[in-house]
Image (cartoon, rainbow, N blue to C red; front, side, top):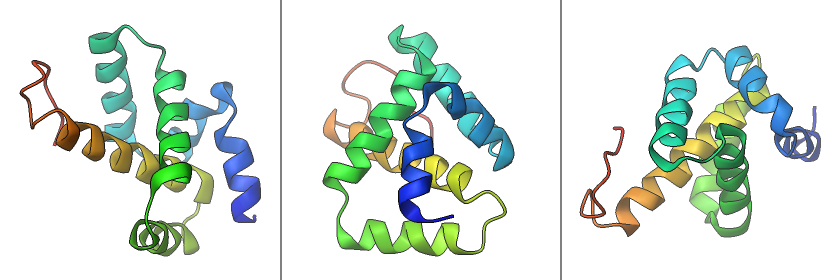
Length: 107
């Protein structure tokens, strides 16, 4: 599977949970559900926002790290999605002042 094919799959809202399940990322599923509950947004919307944020804003180091994680993964698309969600979440956490925004952040 090429990176382009992975990214195409990540743009499908119906695929979000399936990809995280394939990757065995139960913590990622919980993070999405928690964020969805807190924000009132759809979990797939949150995940897609993370994908778009990563693809438009990630620096070379983030891309290299991502490629390293997906290179040998059994579910490259799932691992890619998980990594993008974590990356986007850490940026949002930093942007709002580490909790100064009034909502909880997962570690």
